[in-house]
Structure formats: structure tokens, C-alpha cells
Image 1 (cartoon, rainbow, N blue to C red):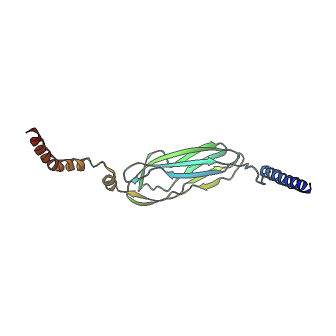
Image 2: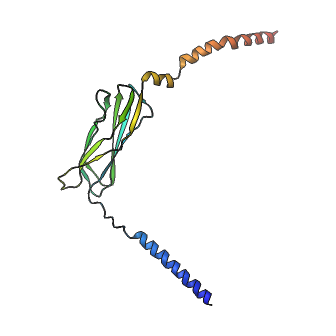
Image 3: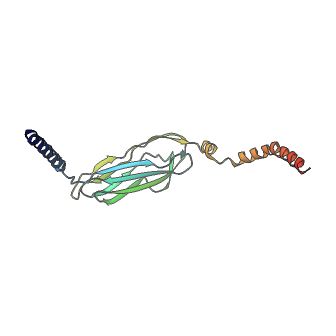
Length: 191
């Protein structure tokens, strides 16, 4: 009988501890809800191969993780010098009047590399007003894709072209070595 009461008491302790743990999970950790806008900026190069003279797509994603709208958001990317890249589509500067809380926007630019070699893709910059009455702008920087190798067009074509002319020459060269034995066999079979 004493063991039964002891088991019930330990079970009750276990249930109390589980209940206490469940309530502790629902208590806020002291982090107040963000009342200002907070923008996170991501910069990605979407191409698998970076080739001189071929289009290069750069994508910018802006996430507002704050509790209010970001106002007068301005994206600026000065990491592509005009001597090395030409802008095919889009702009390296963009503005948004308002970015709602818990939302995101995407901006893309298509560039064409003019030179081959290694290039350091650095971060872009964003500035914005964090709240309706804010007078001071906040600044942020994107993730940096890092260094990328821009391959010369001739090298890229050599590695990835279908080599149709090469296969045609190969077929013509193997035709006599396959055709003569076939003709001999065919001639002996008809006799």
C-alpha cells in the first residue's frame, strides 16, 4: 500500500513538472515585438557559369522583418564598374516608397561582363526610414557573393559547345574502316 501511494506521488510530480514546462514554453522570453522596420538584404548571382560577353543575372531580395513599414527604401550597388560590366536590363539603383512589415521585394539586374578573370562581387547597400516619424535613415549591407571567375567566351565554347563539326569529321574518318568490311561481308553473303 505504501508503494502505491509512493508511485502516485512520483507520477503527480512528473505531471506537475510537465505542466510547468509546457507553461514555460508559452511565456514570452522578454523580447518585445519589433516596432520599427528592419530590412535584410540578400544579393545572389543566379548564373551557374560566368562568361565574358554573356548575360549575368544579379538578384536582390529585401525582407522586412520588423513590425512597421520601411519608408523610402533605396538600393544601391556600386560594385560593378562600367569599365568591366555593361547593364543590359534593369538598374543598379532602385527605390521603393514603402515595404510592408513581414513582406519582401525582389529586384533583378542583367549585366554583361566585358572582361574575363576573377572578380570580387561585394555587397550592395540599402538605406531606409525605419518608421513613419523617423528623421534619421538606417543603412544596411547585403550578403556578399564573394569572388567569381569570369571565363573567356572562347574557353566556354570549347568546353560546352556541341562539337558538331568534330563529330562530323569523326564520322567521315570512321566510315572507311566500318564501310569496307561491311561491303565485303555483304558481297560474300549474296553469293
